[in-house]
Length: 225
Image (cartoon, rainbow, N blue to C red; front, side):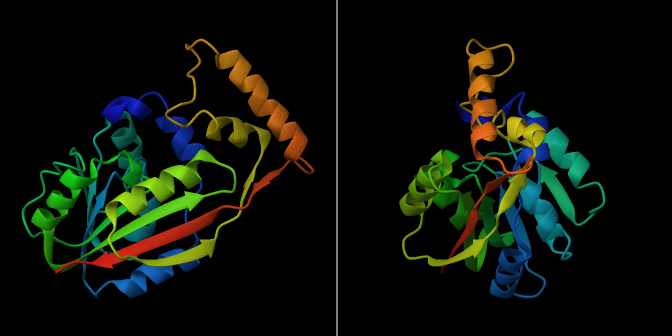
């Protein structure tokens, strides 16, 4: 699917994808030196980038998909400390040795890991840290995606987990289930059948109009020399 995997899904993504708990963000903040420069690679619509930006860090937000960058620009309007970059994980276009911290939230499984690893070495300052963040929920594809991405990329990461329960209304649940790269768009065959299954799942699992998902935010960090 590549760069265009989320074309046509950015609005649903920004309105329904889970964010990251304050506890997880404070943990990340404590990992990094004061005044650190970040490269947030695969920034998407900015769900993670905005949380970093609130701390005042200088951030390069790298995102290859034009639809996602459009939403990213809206989210980051209040933050002059962030610069949006139209680049890929394997070719960020960032200057060499420009970032203390390289982050990738909910994106690592999309990257070509060998090429991204080399790009990290090029972009990272001496002693740079790579931080991978992934939201997972029991029984969901994102568990497999998160495990695959992190296990393939990291050698010996420090791993921490943080509870991040999410509650969906029917409307936000439908948007969430249309935000994945594999989900059919309204113009695709199978869209109506997909929506029927999405509604059936909400009906079976919701309580008082809300569906709870026991999401866990997993943070992987690894320092590189």
